[in-house]
Length: 149
Image (cartoon, rainbow, N blue to C red; front, side, top):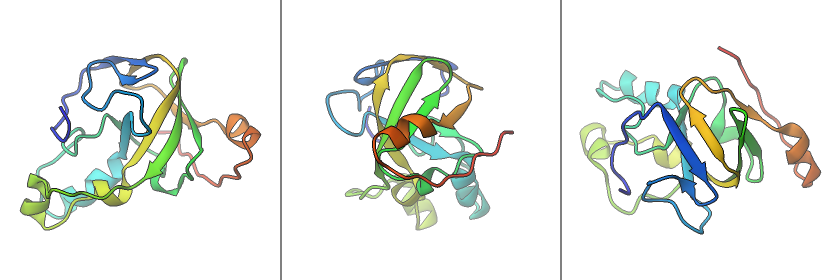
Protein backbone atom coordinates (compact mmCIF):
# COMPACT_ATOMS: atom_id res chain seq x y z
CA UNK A 1 0.00 0.00 0.00
CA UNK A 2 1.09 3.55 -0.66
CA UNK A 3 2.75 5.38 2.22
CA UNK A 4 3.04 2.31 4.43
CA UNK A 5 6.24 1.14 6.03
CA UNK A 6 7.83 -1.63 4.03
CA UNK A 7 9.18 -4.96 5.30
CA UNK A 8 12.38 -6.52 4.02
CA UNK A 9 11.40 -9.35 1.71
CA UNK A 10 14.97 -10.36 0.83
CA UNK A 11 14.27 -10.96 -2.86
CA UNK A 12 11.77 -9.27 -5.15
CA UNK A 13 10.71 -9.47 -8.77
CA UNK A 14 10.87 -6.19 -10.69
CA UNK A 15 8.48 -6.02 -13.64
CA UNK A 16 8.04 -3.34 -16.30
CA UNK A 17 5.48 -1.74 -13.96
CA UNK A 18 7.57 -1.76 -10.76
CA UNK A 19 7.97 -4.10 -7.81
CA UNK A 20 5.63 -7.05 -8.03
CA UNK A 21 2.68 -6.50 -5.68
CA UNK A 22 3.60 -2.92 -4.73
CA UNK A 23 0.95 -0.20 -4.52
CA UNK A 24 3.05 2.17 -6.66
CA UNK A 25 3.33 -0.26 -9.58
CA UNK A 26 1.83 1.02 -12.80
CA UNK A 27 2.35 3.04 -15.94
CA UNK A 28 3.86 6.16 -14.37
CA UNK A 29 7.17 7.80 -13.53
CA UNK A 30 7.41 6.80 -9.85
CA UNK A 31 7.33 3.02 -10.06
CA UNK A 32 10.16 2.50 -7.57
CA UNK A 33 11.35 4.67 -4.68
CA UNK A 34 14.88 4.61 -3.31
CA UNK A 35 16.34 6.10 -0.14
CA UNK A 36 19.92 5.92 1.12
CA UNK A 37 20.78 4.34 4.47
CA UNK A 38 22.81 7.49 5.09
CA UNK A 39 19.58 9.54 4.86
CA UNK A 40 17.83 7.23 7.32
CA UNK A 41 20.81 7.66 9.67
CA UNK A 42 20.08 11.42 9.80
CA UNK A 43 16.65 10.67 11.27
CA UNK A 44 18.14 8.15 13.73
CA UNK A 45 20.53 10.90 14.82
CA UNK A 46 17.46 13.04 15.63
CA UNK A 47 16.41 10.33 18.06
CA UNK A 48 13.93 8.38 15.95
CA UNK A 49 13.75 4.60 16.07
CA UNK A 50 13.59 4.08 12.30
CA UNK A 51 15.29 1.85 9.79
CA UNK A 52 15.11 0.64 6.19
CA UNK A 53 11.56 0.59 4.86
CA UNK A 54 10.15 2.92 7.51
CA UNK A 55 9.92 5.78 5.01
CA UNK A 56 7.92 3.56 2.61
CA UNK A 57 10.86 3.37 0.21
CA UNK A 58 11.02 0.27 -1.97
CA UNK A 59 14.80 0.01 -2.00
CA UNK A 60 17.31 1.17 0.61
CA UNK A 61 20.82 1.79 -0.72
CA UNK A 62 24.19 2.33 0.87
CA UNK A 63 27.25 4.18 -0.42
CA UNK A 64 25.60 5.99 -3.34
CA UNK A 65 24.67 9.68 -3.10
CA UNK A 66 21.19 9.26 -4.57
CA UNK A 67 19.98 12.85 -4.33
CA UNK A 68 22.94 14.07 -6.42
CA UNK A 69 21.93 11.88 -9.38
CA UNK A 70 20.27 13.88 -12.15
CA UNK A 71 16.97 12.85 -13.68
CA UNK A 72 17.80 10.50 -16.55
CA UNK A 73 20.55 8.64 -14.69
CA UNK A 74 20.47 4.88 -15.32
CA UNK A 75 20.98 2.59 -12.32
CA UNK A 76 21.94 -1.07 -12.65
CA UNK A 77 20.64 -3.21 -9.77
CA UNK A 78 22.16 -6.65 -9.57
CA UNK A 79 22.62 -8.50 -12.84
CA UNK A 80 19.30 -7.80 -14.56
CA UNK A 81 17.39 -4.75 -13.39
CA UNK A 82 17.91 -1.33 -14.98
CA UNK A 83 16.15 1.77 -13.64
CA UNK A 84 16.01 5.36 -14.85
CA UNK A 85 15.84 8.16 -12.29
CA UNK A 86 12.69 10.18 -13.01
CA UNK A 87 12.34 12.42 -9.96
CA UNK A 88 14.42 13.70 -7.05
CA UNK A 89 12.52 14.40 -3.87
CA UNK A 90 8.77 14.85 -3.62
CA UNK A 91 6.05 16.96 -2.07
CA UNK A 92 4.28 15.32 0.85
CA UNK A 93 0.67 16.44 0.85
CA UNK A 94 -0.15 14.54 4.02
CA UNK A 95 2.19 14.62 6.99
CA UNK A 96 3.30 11.11 7.92
CA UNK A 97 3.74 9.69 11.42
CA UNK A 98 7.49 10.25 11.16
CA UNK A 99 7.00 13.95 10.48
CA UNK A 100 4.82 14.26 13.58
CA UNK A 101 7.36 12.38 15.71
CA UNK A 102 10.42 14.31 14.59
CA UNK A 103 9.05 17.48 13.06
CA UNK A 104 10.82 16.44 9.88
CA UNK A 105 11.00 13.67 7.30
CA UNK A 106 13.94 12.98 5.03
CA UNK A 107 12.11 11.22 2.17
CA UNK A 108 10.74 14.40 0.49
CA UNK A 109 14.25 15.88 0.28
CA UNK A 110 16.50 12.88 -0.26
CA UNK A 111 14.37 10.11 -1.74
CA UNK A 112 14.49 9.49 -5.47
CA UNK A 113 12.08 7.80 -7.85
CA UNK A 114 12.63 5.69 -10.93
CA UNK A 115 10.92 3.80 -13.70
CA UNK A 116 11.87 0.30 -14.82
CA UNK A 117 13.79 -0.11 -18.10
CA UNK A 118 14.77 -3.77 -17.68
CA UNK A 119 13.03 -6.22 -15.40
CA UNK A 120 14.44 -9.05 -13.33
CA UNK A 121 15.07 -9.99 -9.74
CA UNK A 122 16.75 -7.93 -7.01
CA UNK A 123 17.89 -9.15 -3.64
CA UNK A 124 19.47 -7.79 -0.49
CA UNK A 125 23.19 -7.33 -1.07
CA UNK A 126 22.95 -6.73 -4.83
CA UNK A 127 25.25 -4.02 -6.11
CA UNK A 128 23.68 -0.81 -7.36
CA UNK A 129 25.82 1.20 -9.75
CA UNK A 130 25.37 4.16 -12.03
CA UNK A 131 25.39 2.87 -15.60
CA UNK A 132 27.50 5.70 -16.94
CA UNK A 133 27.61 4.39 -20.51
CA UNK A 134 23.83 4.10 -20.89
CA UNK A 135 23.30 7.43 -19.15
CA UNK A 136 25.71 9.30 -21.43
CA UNK A 137 24.20 7.73 -24.56
CA UNK A 138 21.06 9.68 -23.84
CA UNK A 139 22.82 13.05 -23.70
CA UNK A 140 22.97 13.56 -19.95
CA UNK A 141 26.22 14.42 -18.24
CA UNK A 142 26.39 13.02 -14.75
CA UNK A 143 28.63 13.48 -11.79
CA UNK A 144 28.54 10.87 -9.10
CA UNK A 145 30.52 9.11 -6.47
CA UNK A 146 30.17 5.44 -5.73
CA UNK A 147 31.73 3.88 -2.68
CA UNK A 148 31.76 0.13 -2.42
CA UNK A 149 31.19 -1.18 1.06
